Length: 369
Ligand SMILES: [Zn+2]
Image 1 (cartoon, protein in one colour):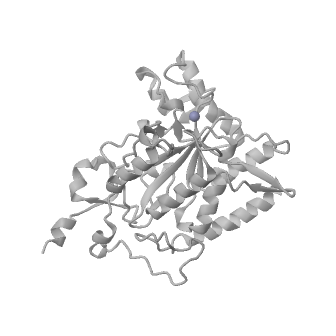
Image 2: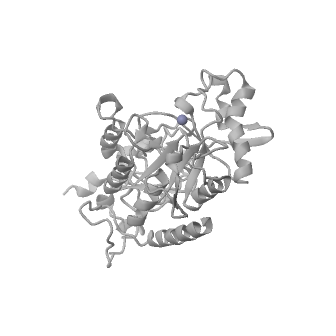
Image 3: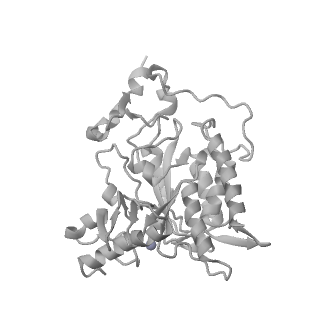
């Protein structure tokens, strides 16, 4: 049964990945277009190189702009401060897509490997707590299928209709029972299948500590801290041998006292080492990219993906998108070149380029008569 699903999904993913390079879309996302139809005669995408032919005015690349790392929790009914309904999550993806955002993995952000078409903007999806509604299986007529209303099901379905959106997401699970379901038929084999499938889809597993404690208030000593941080990696070794969780999402966004903070980055538990290359906060602002002088991987902000009906202070999603209209990262389509408007050059950390080519431009100068 599981093999059947795997095969189907594998074929679906081959289809999706085969479609990505040739998909022209940007920078003119057309919300009116039927999402189910594809242009049978796609225009070839302009190559970003050679340099003089790159259309700066068309794409307005800014690879020092901000990247939203959205923080979701539950995907179910009804909507509340930590819950997004399936329909609202679908609408979020459509909105992001129509605005020109494309999914990238957290690993791509922290390794400076953002590879999306010119004119599009990167966006990271994260889900905390690893509830079953993040990745739920249904038994329908003896077939096991991915619940179309769980987070994973919604992302995969969206990518089927919009292959260039991608399927990257990070799930901050609690081990050893990620996405635990209470159905009587649900076994350890199903749980294992979920973990292995995530990797196949380019989705990532992140650390959310062992017991979801407040690391600032509830930790008594260093051993306890390393158990909270390191035991999840220790437990994952049994489930996915060799898989290294490179990201930590802090419960409540709480960091331990200053002299223990290095242990957020690395340490060990029972001889098993852990290393987090990014530590995520619970915040309300988008993140700075790798080459920005204020890039802060050990305290990376996230935005709560919530439109709580009272608006106001909890309306993080609308507020962040409004801010990003002016500040967002816009790709030049080439991961080896970092393109920056001249007016942003003072935000560059030149030491972070590490062999990538820096390219700057000034539209005002070239557009003057
Ligand atoms: Zn949590």
